[in-house]
Length: 188
Image (cartoon, rainbow, N blue to C red; front, side, top):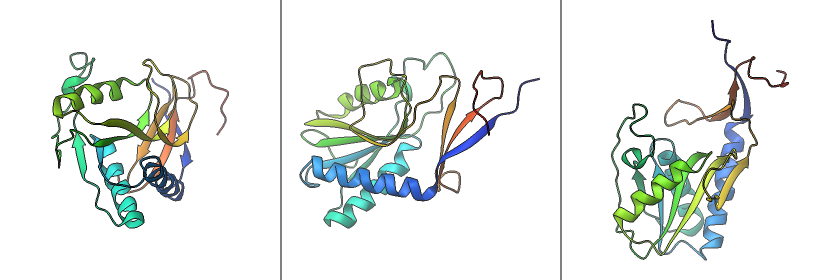
């Protein structure tokens, strides 16, 4: 019998809101405004986060930044190793010459972002590509680092970071999940 999964909340809905607000401000500051920006959310949970960032930037700058949705399933290096669900990719504008901010919920090994970069090159030639993530949990396997991070959250490889989003699960929270036999001295 497997041990029960235990979870601890590490970000509340309010902390997620504040992190996204800070990231939106940082994106505008780094890019000297919102002109030429495109936000691209990686399916599945990067898409609603990109939409939220777009709303925040629109509120600050009075500019509607285009938002796209990118499915990287067929670009993954493990596509044949396990089942994957393919979703739609939607690009509102040509990416050529634009500053693209790729948005995802959790940065782990870098493999998802590597696949996203491959997919983006099939869609155009951006002037620059930046990365915004809600959580950076470490464990890089590629020399890729997010430009914008909501929360750095050191984890063990046996832990799982679960991001719950209002648009998908009905509430906002970031949780670390683990089993009691994961070898951790973490109490809760």
